[in-house]
Image 1 (tube, rainbow, N blue to C red):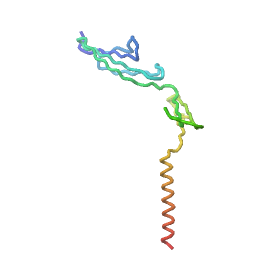
Image 2: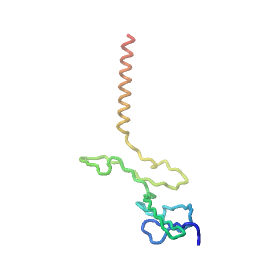
Image 3: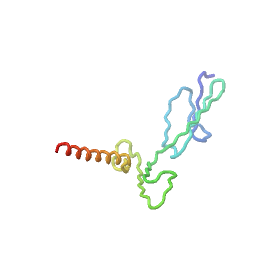
Image 4: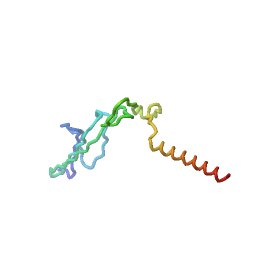
Length: 135
């Protein structure tokens, strides 16, 4: 009889374990074999006396191309014509970095415009005050 605990690893609701090991273990989960979406990693440990411990870890797989949408968020209430920008890009080969299409262009946030307008206003004010004091 072994003095080590056994660990069984399940993915989602599979009846057959992904792997069965003696504790402690290190393993690599290959998510390329899983479909994109929500999954659950279920770890079942059994000690030498037969007692079980279970831990479920939910995770999300996104191996497919990433989709970025700007202009419409979940549960938005909208009317009229809405400009929407959609970009989809994959990871590619992973051995080379592709710049083309790897970043999603985004509009400039409103807070940046507020800072720029504030700075320009201050610069104009400073220039006017400086001109008045030198005369």
